[in-house]
Image (tube, rainbow, N blue to C red; front, side, top):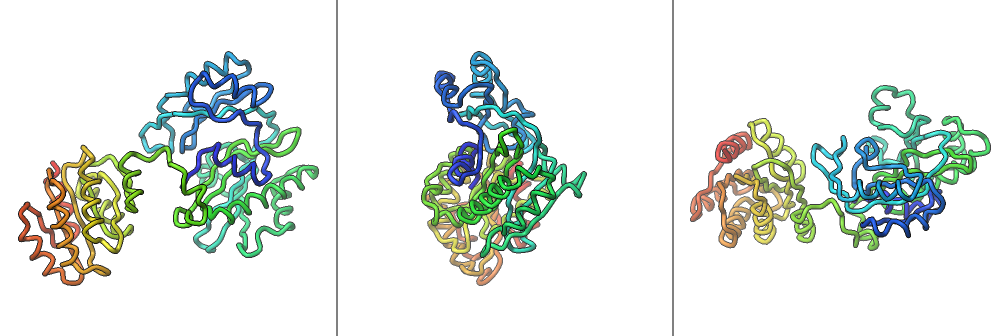
Length: 385
């Protein structure tokens, strides 16, 4: 689960991580004067709250030195469609902005805690060059990236925090504050079951260090341990994605015309790649899971067919946990409840695959059967046109 900047900073604030004075989040320009008063004396920063980086370059972050400038900035950002390098070509509508007090910046640093799959544990990523795209910096100047592994059972030792501060070239008077900050970030990462906690930039001001921006991503599989986060509604989810989440289905809407229903995330990714290789575009990622029973298959069909872009549906199921004949029976039962308005291609493989194909051949609606995934993808692309 990705948190918006102001939500991330609320977690920072609760753990003593210094952040700019906040005027809160506003959704209309009429709420701005009160927000400016809460944020304190200007200048102020007006920041679009969307789940994407690169907001500043896209016009989603503006500095205001007077209330009049703040009003104009809020009016220009609220309601705008923000397109950045992280939005995959689609725009995100800005429904709320964060109002914060400005900061006198002396230096910009980068600091994050991420899950390192190679070491199977958290790793601190830091750089003395913050405020820019860390991916670009890592590619162009890898020597500027510092890494420090963390033992989840111990946390970050004091000596490791101090060493990182010295490697970043921080003045001696700011080393204690940095050590407290980085240890608090590691604590947040571990306590909230995060996959990423990022501060970019972490700025040095005359008064000390300040987390000027914040990004937190938590593990969805651990939300049962965090009921406060589990109640949060992701503002970027589409109505179909919200509906799928309630039904415990993994669904992500895409921009293609071929609806996909697959059991298993890896198989779903392979299915989408094969559709692209065959000249088509997937309309969604949909993993019905290993237990693809009648209820889940029915709901999956309903979700896929609600997307007006879908011109064909490809079902690619591997019968392992659930046998192919049981899956076929589930598909037929689902089709009796759902009005199929587009061509349907089904590829089954696994235990009792012949029985499953025989059942599908008896269906009252026309089902295009495929022997393998490449055959299925080609048929789906052809009928979608």
